[in-house]
Image 1 (cartoon, rainbow over the protein chains, first blue to last red):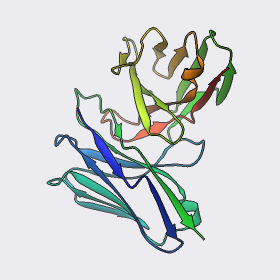
Image 2 (tube, rainbow over the protein chains, first blue to last red):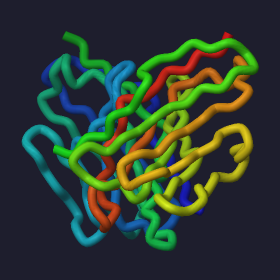
Image 3 (cartoon, rainbow over the protein chains, first blue to last red):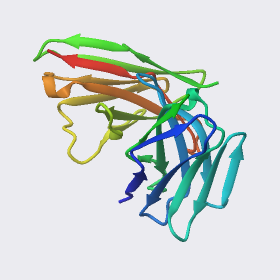
Image 4 (cartoon, chains in turn cyan, brown):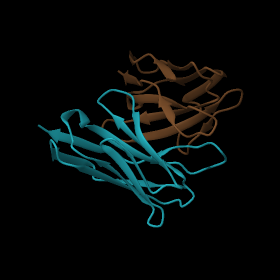
Length: 114
Length: 116
């Protein structure tokens, strides 16, 4: 089955710097890769996603890149702000019998230092 | 936007008792609901998938008789933790696909269960 690895597990950056979180997946059939942000004690919120037919997607300060050949995808946050501090989860979605089960990475705790 | 309402947000129960967690889809029909468990500082582990009108599908290692899932209608799915023990203490969260394509989940707000 699909397996998703996420690195780093923790990341501290200075406000204004960029942050990059990387995930690798094992199932080449996976075709959808969302990123979620979870603040302490709250529900995960979708921040950006990318489908396998696209190599890059950007939404203001957030971008995601996908390398299907290498089976990895990355989240890029530019001009980080203290409110970006949270846990970020990537996920890969293999089309298993149409159920679209999300396989989550282990999470990255991002801390933006003011 | 589409929201999944989850209740209760937190619950404390005694060992041996059962606890029911509800997830309701608001403004959309959730034919499928995914139930996750999250330990502190860890990832979301899929426990089971519930489908309206049929039996839930459990992930390997998840006890069906302990975690009872019912998907009674297109807007309601419930998870009952039976005969709870302290090791069942965790954050339980549900999610539903926003459309039939399966792309894009919306999550419930989660339930923090503490078994004493």
